[in-house]
Length: 361
Image (cartoon, one colour):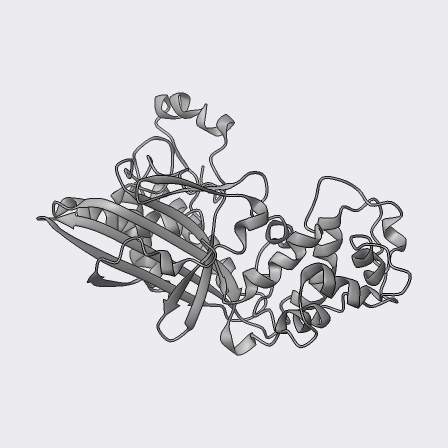
């Protein structure tokens, strides 16, 4: 059995039976999770094999729009499930370890705590923390690492703009709005603003969010046509998050000739012979068009490759598992390079924790 899906408790419960029958149940072998596991474990194992001790691991991944198709103020289009984008970060505080200290970022602060990243040839990006950065800490053998942080990549400025939706409350998926199908986009926004006998919806929005009329944040809202009194939501019994997703689909759907882009960035800090070092590993993959996307390629190809490796008797270790063993990641990462999924690893001086990297820390 081969799947890109996460290992559920029910799946893990099958492990003993799977091993007893000599079967391979390969899970989490898509992009993220998947290629992130394989590319990370490759470098971690190489560091350990030469006697190094891991002290820092940071990993970021993002599905974005390619530069040649980047034509909106948000520098973003949907390249995977829009609902997951709208609900990102909800369901508990983001949790990670920084310099040996547990850190938590509540949802309402998440998109103002970002870290800058630079990828040669593609410029500057930002990353915000995933909900649980420690989920794979033991899996990766990083129990003694001082810093373990996993995040999502966006273009700089996206998180600050998305935070406007969070502060308005329109990413909430826990309740249904009355008469939602008859709301206009303008009505929808007005639901979350104070009543005023004189101020327009636009003025109330700016006051509520503290943005000036000449702020680029305001232009980003206008670009989404949020204040249109004629466009109807048309969704019955919809939550705020469902309506927001519907509105964003108007602007952020990939067009026929649009290309998407996957960016993955790992940072490995380690100690060897009393010296601290760092390796940065970066991967950028560009899609062909709306159908043959980088997202489709990076999620689908590893699944197919793993299936072939199992059928050919190259992957034999039985059990419910992730692609973290050398017999799995070595051949698949090598084959992925033929399809343009290539990691560039760079050795550099150890940077470690630097509070200046974080906005609003």
